[in-house]
Amino acid sequence: MTPHGDPRPMTARSGGALTGTAAIPGDKSISHRALILGALAVGETRIDGLLEGQDVLDTGRAMAALGAEVIRHGPGAWSVHGVGVGGLAEPDRVIDCGNSGTGVRLLMGAVATHPIAVTFTGDASLNARPMGRITDPLALFGARAFGRSGGRLPLTLIGASDPVPVDYTTPMASAQVKSAILLAALNARGPTIVTEREPTRDHSERMLAAFGADIATERTNEGHVITLQGQPELRPQTVAVPCDPSSAAFPVCAALIVPGSDVLVPGIGLNPTRAGLYETLREMGGDLTYENPRDEGGEPVADLRARFSPDMRGITVPPDRAASMIDEYPILSVVAAFAQGVTEMPGTAELRVKESDRIDAMARGLRDCGVAVDEGPDWWSVAGRGPGGVPGGATVAARLDHRIAMAFLCLGLAARAGVTVDDAGPIATSFPAFIDLMRDLGATFVQGDAR
Ligand code: S3P
Image (cartoon, rainbow, N blue to C red; front, top):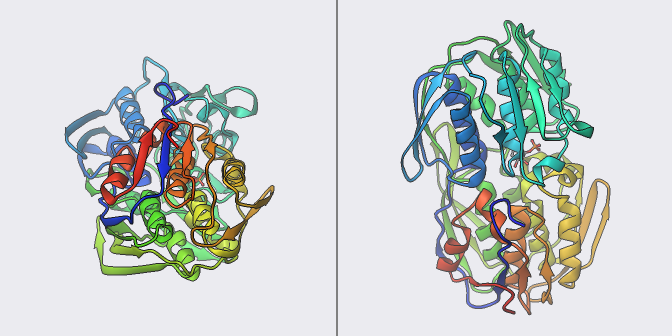
């Protein structure tokens, strides 16, 4: 089932080359943060290029339920009238975050230091995901959580009425955990310190600084140490959301594996904490070129051109790069299937607790398509079959996971017998325009099991 309706099977078949310009929607991570920080500032924040995917819309609805005024002015153009740090109100209904781990985890952080009770729930995927990684550090601020076994949703969080700042080292590389703590820290008097051994995406830190918070990051032998002074008055901002490198990954990777393709992605976000996939693809021999590098909304961006690359080779992806491409492993494994030799992906345990167990979901689907995959608890590897060498012909399960659905639809464009995804519905959580955008580039996507 999709989060919001009946399953929508979709089939991808090989056809012509993919060519043209791909206008990628706004960054999902930045969109969530803009809505939340806008709600915590005093006054009107304007957002341009907001991703209007289901995940972000659910966060917008949540901020409204918590007392902010959230208004849509036109496509991607939104404003948030914030209530200020400490000003969130207790909602009179359950907050449903749908499929979004980022949404619920960041919201739990913001709520944890307000003296209110909030009940969170989500779809079957989200309600199966671990939340102890969030509620444990939030308990140090004085918040209390009552969830299902394993701390899973549905869960009620009772925010601290007299929150204290914390000093916490994140046990796993997770921007969601780091960001939940920073958002909680906003309403705790004094400095909160978060240490992360491996750097993760830093959009929260960048945006908090832009909203006027006193925040500093220091590189030490222990890792990145982030210090945030509590109880700032956040100043409303105009946020220009750059396009999402994680969404761009799908047309870019499809171009690399579909013969004759040449696709341009303008304004792709190249924040180094997000750009690991592109480095990896180049090391594999992918024909990627950057044009016109510039800064947009405090984030580095460039125009990226991707061309069919018949000479790609498998590599070992350095494990210390995993955090900077954590959402891109599903589509990387598709490219790896069309490369020569084996691609090893160590240090990827976090993939097992995403919207689905992404190692398991990709491994099963790839095997059904004729590609050999090995796996362990925190690693996996794909044996490439070379350009044009993937049989395909399977119907694979999307498992309520947008990135699994998009990855296999891209695979189907280059596999000999196409691929059917049992449910393309979840794609709407992050990239509602995916099907149309890919068709405009030349992709053959047919509704139903039409192989
Ligand atoms: C995100 C962080 C990542 C990523 C997710 C978005 C964020 O999760 O997988 O899609 O916006 O902070 P983790 O921080 O749990 O790795």
